[in-house]
Length: 238
Image 1 (spheres, rainbow, N blue to C red):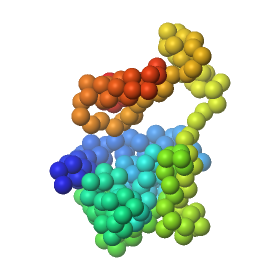
Image 2: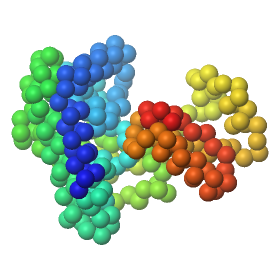
Image 3: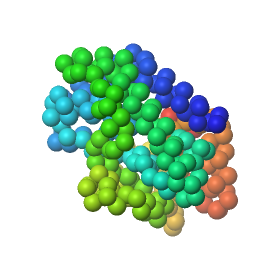
């Protein structure tokens, strides 16, 4: 359908540019210089995470704010309009197969081969790429509340093997958060100067529609429940 085709096009465009190579090279350089004990990666940075593991021996875990592990109970994120949550297992499975094809294309792309060659690594074979796309390359931590995300029944083998775990929201201690961020005085007063804390709304790096549309959506939601709120600008520039 239309939205899924746009998702495919955006994904293919993102992995087919010299910028893809440059950003990953910069990311790898910064991570190696920092010398962490473990790397937390995402679907977008999986190519860099593989190189960090194979070339520099740095283990990785995939950190996700939405599910990226296939299940017959839910369609793949980004392709929801092609699936039927909880109703049509084979159709939901098909959406994950389509995503696997996209990931395989990324792993076998000329740009990814160029990136790997720069570190003396061979490009991925067709079989290796397909195997990675079928099973999580790294253990996955799904940072979503279990009240909002029901663990799929067909994940039992993956959970037993340590491939995936739903861990809930990741938070920092309040004291540590305050020390790490220079909060404007008016914002601090707005947050702590009332009996009830405000509701936080933000889309992070996600951009859809327009900034005006997302701002209106957030304001209407706050008005609908008669709550005060703090809206994060994010990449959409709200």
